[in-house]
Length: 54
Image (cartoon, rainbow, N blue to C red; front, side, top):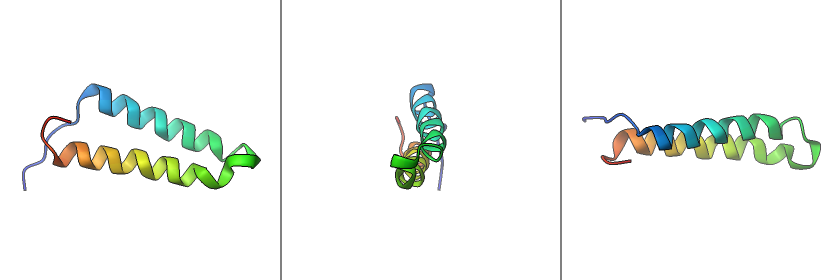
């Protein structure tokens, strides 16, 4: 299986999702959503490496 490097835009979006997810852990009202935001960024990054053009 050939993998591709993600574009800079996708990489920055994933980085922002990671930072938002980590910040959510410190806000008690939305702490439960932090892991889901981090997981969304990870899935997006994995899809970007598997699909060409992302």
